[in-house]
Every structure is written in C-alpha cells, then in structure tokens.
Image (spheres, rainbow, N blue to C red):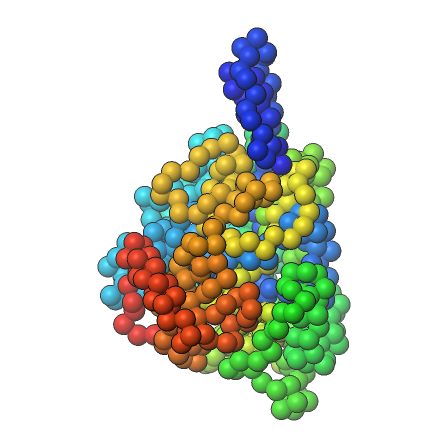
Length: 539
C-alpha cells in the first residue's frame, strides 16, 4: 500500500522502505484522497467458520476478500466482547481503557478506574484520533462500552452511529438476552424504534451504507461495522436456515474432522497441527438419542445460516462501495471479537426459568424470533477445532481469532506473526497520516502489512488478563493460568510451535523460563492495575 503525503507543496509517495522525496516549492500541491478504512467485526465467530479458514459455511464474499488480502492467523483479542472492544477502540490495554472485566466487576475491583465497565473519558478513541486528521467516523455496531453520555459513540468521535449498547439481543427484535437486561438500540444518542422487518445483520448493514453515503466524496472515512451475529440467541431468516438442512446430521466430531482438514488445506494451520477434539463439556454424539440429536443439528443449522447471512450483507456492502467508487481506495480489516461461545446461556444467570417461560425451543421453531438457543460446547469445540477452549478463556481457542486485512494495491498471502487487537487503532491512525502518543500500547502493523518486520520481537514478553485468567507470550512460548476445569490454578507452560493446542504442559522442565515469565506478568499486572476478584468468574 502506498502512503501519500503533501510536504511543502510536493506530493510525496511513500512505499515500504522508500525515502522521502526532496521538497521542491515550485511543484504545486496535489491533493490525494487518503484511503477509507472499513472495519468489520463478527461476534463470537469460530476460528474455522469462514471457508478461507477451513469451514463449509457459504462465505464467498468474505473469502474473496481474505484470499485477495492477507490472512492473519496469529491474531489475538480479549476473551470476551467488552474487553476486546475497549482495546479495539483505544489501542491500549483493556484495563487502562476502563474495561478490566465485563459487566461483572467485583466490589474490590469497582473502586478502580480499571474496572469501570465503560470507556474512560481520559482515553482517546481511534475515531477521535482519526477526526483530528480529517476523517469522518461512522459506526453501526454492538457498542458494549458503557451507557453513560460520555461513553456513547457520538461523544467519542463518531459523527453518525447506530449501536446496540448492551452485549447482545434478539436478532429479529429488541428482546434482551437476560430477563434483567435491556436491549437498547440508539441512533446517535437517541433511542430508535426498530422496523417491523428488522433483522440485525441486514439493518446494521443498511445503516452503515447510509452513513457512508452521507459522507462527502472528498472526505475520507472510518466505518466500523460490528455485527451482533452470530452471537446468541441463534436466530436467522427461514430461507437461510433451509440452505443448511441436513448438513450436520453426522454430528460435531464429523464437523471437527472436516474443519481441521479444511484449516490445513487453507494453510491457516500447519500440516502437522493436531487439533483438540474434546474437552470438559463436550459430549459423545452417539450418547445422544435421536430427539436430542435433532435439536442439536437444528442449532448448528441456524448458526451457519447466521454466518451465511452476515456474508451476504458483506457482499451488499462491497457492491455499494464499488458503485460509490470507494472500494479501490479502502483498507478493509475483518476480525472476530473472541472465540466461539460454548456456554449454554439458556441456563445461565437465571435464564433456566426465564427462557422456558418465554420462548418456544421446539425443534421446528428453533431459529425463529421467539426461540432462544445457544450453540453449546460441543459444536463450539468443532468451530474452534485447532485450539483449546473457547470464549471467556485465554487459551488460544478463546483469544486467537480469524482475521484478515485487504490493502489497496496490497499483496495476498498468510501472515503467521503475532498480532493483537490493540494494534489496529495505531495502524488506522498511521494509515490516515496521523501519529499515536505514548498512551497507545498497541503497535502499528502498517509496516508489517507492507512487507516489513513483525511488530513484536521473539524475545518480548506480552502479557494479558481478564477474569483472573492470565497469559504471557514470548516467542513460541506461552505461560497460561486458568482455574479448573480450564486449568489447574497454577501456571502452565506451552510451546505453541510444537503444541498449538496447549495440551502438553512443560513448566516442570523449564522452571527458569517460567519464573522469568511470571515476573513479566507481575510487572504487567502492576502497570495496568489488575485486581484479583474475590471469587472466581462464573463465565
């Protein structure tokens, strides 16, 4: 990707490693439109759900983008929605942004700025930084970063926005995901009445296209499209569900095997990569009776329909950008916000009484607006096939997600270098010609995208924490701390080059390294203000 600067009236074209041209005041200024930036986020998408990452779901538009750009196979997020979005929007650690936990900070934690469950006013957003260099920012997204006026997107740099404030909602209406929750859709800072034909993915796409359409042609824009799909409850249009009838009758182990083969075929994992077929909560398909299997198959059919519908809408958006003349000058980044959702949320947080009393989860009704089902641990295991664990955990299955970048005139390929979600904000700012200050912890990936060195050196220790689940990366090594049944409540050590599924703990054989990485974690925790909760997380 070329970058364009106007220096002393001279247009300077910078490429990877290109020196700046000398300034010549006799050359008139030439105005060149900086690239637009489009960020697309899927909610709770599994690592192998896209065809370009090994899946069988029809995702031709996303796959076309992924294969024309660079697939980022070692890209890391937070383990759940809100911490990821805090890092995404600010370019700094989730604790420093005010989102050390997610809506469930304990009494001990709530006194700290790191656990306010909303963006801190003192931490600039990427939209604010981009606005300072002339970009217009718009959003159509799940927000999940606070409900007070100062935390809303229109107060944080977005000129137009449609947002779902909370962590989730029904996809056909504003049904909340818990009986004690709300589902608040705002346009800018005002409540909005959803149309009768509302479906979240369609409506959010309509809105981002409208906001982009309002943008003058000579103004570059940052568009944040953060779908709520395929977050639970699983709901999709009947015509899309019908496409997947019978596709999953063989069960989740068959899907796991197919997804692993697909991931290897696509090159997003190595040919010798051993997946993780089972873990606590995963059932043997043959242990289910015919009625139970029918229910489980229906869930996966609806889930796939949701992903399919998301891809259809990306196709609509790409067609719109093409017709507007923007596509060839737009940087596109796609990512999931965390690993697949494995919790049976029908039985979580009081839903065990509320769901049966208010929804019809009979097989024939699964996927409609008055049904409420979730994917469950066994299907989620298949969608996260190469890696251990799922959403809310900090093993690779919880925080390594499918992602790709498409740059104007950029190359295609696969990048296996370590990256993380907080790197995107400074990347976008650099693309726009701006600069980030010392408060930004993430690193711009632009040089890497243009063929340069990885953003992180092999000897650097990179730490993180959410829900008292902790990790430290250094090169191929990963130190991991999780409570049972996800861990041992002791530090465990894995060599991800040899054991990407984190199955062989080698801490006992590498005591010195473990101690070094623990020290690195302790320094990180002190720097960002980690506070250990009084009780283990239930999520």
